[in-house]
Each structure stands twice: as structure tokens, then as C-alpha cells.
Image (cartoon, rainbow, N blue to C red; front, side, top):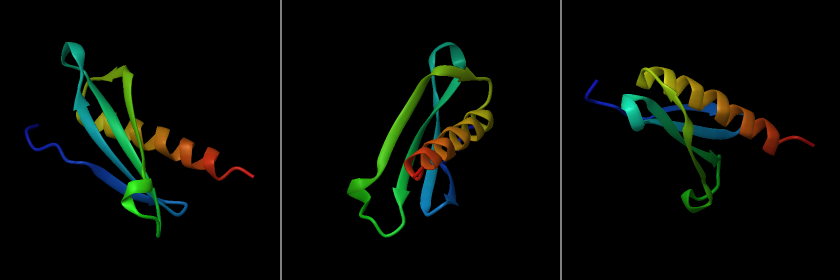
Length: 78
């Protein structure tokens, strides 16, 4: 897969963008970005995951979305 692009979705008032990244040993990990609707880009949260290792970039994106959703849920917890 040569054209690797970020996968994005709206979730509970945030835009989540996940980008797969090539890691060691030909495995894939991800970087994700959370941006609350209506806030400037400078206030976005960016995280990188380098502990896992997924066989395909699509799998890394799916995992990244799950991790990012969990972080949004935790941010919104009362």
C-alpha cells in the first residue's frame, strides 16, 4: 500500500484523525489527533502509539480509532 492517508471520523464532539506509521520489523503503529469542534487547531491533542505492532496499516488505523475513542470518553467523563 503506497498511498497511506489518515482516517478520520467525528465522535462525541471531536474529530479523530488516525495515521498509520511504519514501525520496526515491518509492523505498523499509529498516530492519532483529537480536535474538539470549534477549537483552534493549535489546541488539538496528538498522540503516538509505538508499543504494539500491527500486520497491516488498516488494522493500525482501526486500533488507533478505538484508542482515540477511549481517550475522548475519558476526557468527557463527569
